[in-house]
Amino acid sequence: MAQPTNFGFGEEQVMLRDSARKFFQDSLPVDKLHALVAADPDPHRPLVTQWAPELWQQMVDLGWTMLAVPERVGGMDLGAVAVAALCEESGRAAFPSPLLATANVSYILAAANSTAADAALEAIAGGAAATYAGIDSRGSWEYADTDVEVRDGKLSGTAYYVQDAQKVSQFLVKARNGAAVELYWVAADATGIALEIDAIVDLTRDQARVCFDGVTAELVATDAGAALHQAMPALWTMVAADMVGAAEWQLQTTVEYARVRKQFDRELGFFQAVKHPLVNVMLEIDQTKSLVYNAACALDSEPEAAARTAHMAKASASDMAAYASSRSVQFHGGIGFTWECYIHLYFKRQMHNQMLWGDAAYHRAKLADLVIGPVAA
View 1 (cartoon, helix red, strand yellow):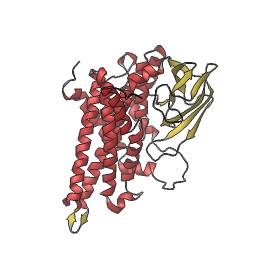
View 2 (cartoon, rainbow, N blue to C red):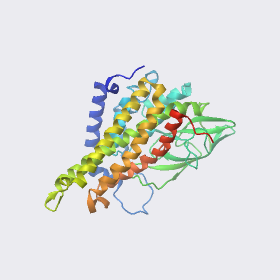
View 3 (cartoon, rainbow, N blue to C red):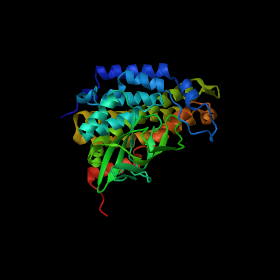
View 4 (cartoon, one colour):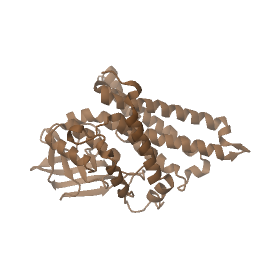
């Protein structure tokens, strides 16, 4: 099926985007965000996640956890384009919440297509926050790699690099059961689960190792690889959308600063060494944004092109994020390197996003495998 006009971004998507932007601006403007997550500059501070659970509940009440959930199990299913718009606005606000993690789990569960997976999706539609626990100690994104095993019908082992682990009520766990690799749904407060918190640069998120010691869990997919293969393009696309939103904030903030900050009796924006790179940032953001919505639209209307377009979007987003972040800090001058300047919140979120689910080189290599075939050994 051919893609619709304007990537299928219609009135409903516009209303969602605008309402989300207003919600984030009103609920947690950047000064309040900084006070919430960056109140303590001590590098040896306790590893405690700082966020606003009451705002997450308001997001649930707005129905945002239902967006990536199919209608057949109580979701809204507005399409990936709508979810991308919401993720973009979340990135623009650098909002600390399990929104992205929960959307990711929703896509994986929908691909699992089982009765148990549908029950888990119903829980998410009802407001449960969830995250994926399926990365091994090497940080491998490959579908068969996991350090969690099923022993006597229970989960044992450790899942690494688990996003927003302290904010969720459910884990979707990838575990090896003999020769099979399966997916399991487990409550975060289940007996036998322990969190080992990671120290990460991103102040708007938390990350942990989730340790399982004889944990009772519900099987939701007997073939994790098949479900992940189908769902991963959505995960790459949504994190790329988050990066677009963050970069748009960086650009806007830096342009505003260049208009008011003077040097040699001229606004900074007067100098070509400043304004030309800012134009390049704008061009890179526009390019990535087009690729993101092309990928989201492919998820909705051209699933056979979803992996290819998502690899393009994430590769472009990772490169764009690095460039936009470096320019935003550089053009804020001496203050741009300080803790008090809000720029560092976005710089750090972008650096985390840049590597999350694979950096640009990883996705270009995967894209090359799709387009021209893998290189012979």
